[in-house]
Length: 325
Figure 1: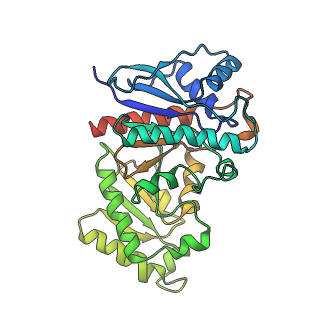
Figure 2 (figure 1 turned 45 degrees about the horizontal axis):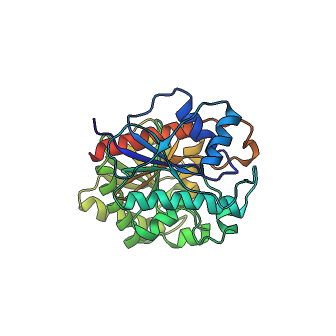
């Protein structure tokens, strides 16, 4: 039986990433059949497994092998043997980036069908001198049409813009850019079996502008972009009042809300699905998913982290690869 090859990165060594990865694989939860390749430092894996009391074994990954089920290791040595727990640190930033970089290189080279990423610290990346804010920005350097989306069993959301100051995010709301986003979203979602087939677009202003009384973006930019997308056969509507549109989509996995900026989409999503939500990058030639939470420095190294979102990310990666096969 041929199974997909799914790379899994540990994330920031000082956060809960190593813990939730080991718990996801070592706690007996049901995961899709796959060849799982961990990208990280074996010393950190051994230290974490010992602290958790989890027996954990991963054989060396031989990149030429295809379709062999099990757990394997692609050794990515950290800059230092020790790690700074519960705080941002340049060494941890370099370590998390190296494992992510290696996994993405393997996926871009056709040696992985999916990449599941542990949570990283944007501050640690900055301290390490990296020019990217996070995973999605790095992927966008190779795939400019990449789309940040969030999936759960309650709500589906995609973001037109993500890690930008609000003033810059609002400035991007323009007709041509929105239409490109809607086209890319429709194409990417169409490749996912059982994925969303209808898109709801919130307005930017209260009450979706109230016919121009509370803002003009809906009439000048958002509405025309939605109509242009509809004329191309995309099942899309809007702009809808942003304070009610998420309620319309809740519990409807055939509907996705195309939010216009980071917090417009992420506040309602995390309210409904913080423990089980998954961040998925659409528009790539491979699947990429991640837990919908950060490094949780405050509980790192204490054995308290919930692996639920990591398990959900691995399962969604398996679903995406099944859709692609």
